[in-house]
Image 1 (cartoon, rainbow, N blue to C red):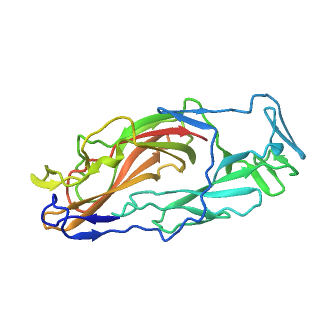
Image 2: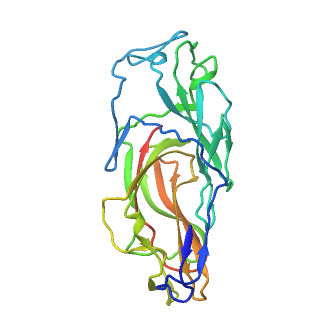
Image 3: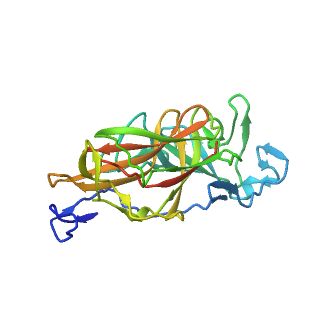
Length: 330
């Protein structure tokens, strides 16, 4: 990112340039898009084209029928929630690095988050802030497998190991277990002071379990490309400081919609959106602050939406506004 401006007059764009670069030391070589049969509309989730319309369930060494569908003959792919940590390689499972989770404030003023990758079940991250790392698995049904059911540990699997069980929970839509809330405020500023801190903003009731829970989180960025900095305001200690990104105008249509599958251990902060703001301080130095939006499993069926702030100097903070929808999947 290239920032150009004057150190003496914020309205003058021909002054001293400052180059600020963020990078993760990785270069994507291939991108695979998975299209789910889950549909989002105006704060709600629904299933599109549900093939499971029957009532019969039959599992034998040579067959796996669920509600009228013989899964080995479909080549369907199912997404599972897995335990945190590394998983072993197997030919019928694909692993995807999912998200990091933190017991407290994490990150720094760059607003970078910990990207979690998986190489055949072995986790890695180009930027490591010490979070617990999760991954999800995609099971690919195919013919010719030998199936078993173990009632002692409540698992279903084949010759390669467990497919469904307590450590590999299939994701499914829980009707009615969804909530939507707005985060951020372009009218009323926050006054976080200086330093690194977490601020809870809202709570959504989902009825999620007390242990690890998996959700799909949808973020609508409301007019996200209109943030600007450098507006004088009497904000802190009766002094005049430049605020952190107040929108020039607003509308409710939303600029972009993003979906993420996240695994939420109880009491941990799980990041899902980051942004940063730049400002010139009274002594003409460039200051950078970061804001990392998080979701937290409270352990009582609810999740808390909040933000981790890294603020170098006291100022007013206008948090960019988001609409967040969370849907229970386990």
